Length: 315
Image (cartoon, rainbow, N blue to C red; front, side, top):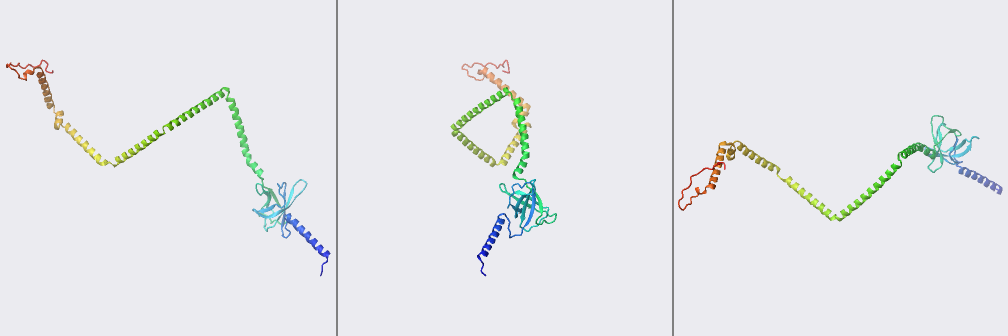
């Protein structure tokens, strides 16, 4: 059977119309080949939500926003969206508008609830709006703003108190103190410069001094090593032996043993020695006064004088 040109033209026109409808629906986010469930949710403000925005459950995209219309003359909005995935949730589930990122758009998030009957296509669910970034920042900065305001008030009060206390004379004193401090700092800078110059001029001497100190430390270390190597036990034994001998000598003297002991302890010996000493002294005195009595040297045989004791025997 041969088709006429009119039939062919009609078929092409119908195909074009169907393709146009399918393409338009696809651009709107509706897939005519899939069986989707439709749901509705009301909002007072959609916060910039647009058609074809994604619908997610736990972060997984399960549908798209189909349409946004006014519900009444008061400005309430009705959002129509579809769910493509076969995922059941109750009528009490919450559909929340949230931000997809810092600079991203808005999306619908379904927070499933299971405490009621399963939601069917055409049901109206409860809506909610997540706080935007600006709202969250404003809430977070609210306490900080109050603290800053309180701090500024305290600082203002403090400055007023300082202005009331610091009069003209106090300001002059502060200026003078600052000037004196600058002078002191300049003096310190001069002293530091002089010290650096002295150190630079005496670098060699300082190096020699440190070298000598290092040698001295080495010698002390060697001396310490030598002392540590001494036979301290033998040295202590020898010292103890010497002390014992000295103790015996002192004990002997105390007991009158030996010449030294008898001299110190024997009174008679001491008296004899004292008498002999006096007699020797008298003899030496007489020899000095009468030498001829003891030295017999005479040509004519002159007779010697008799001995005359001195007038003062103690002399």
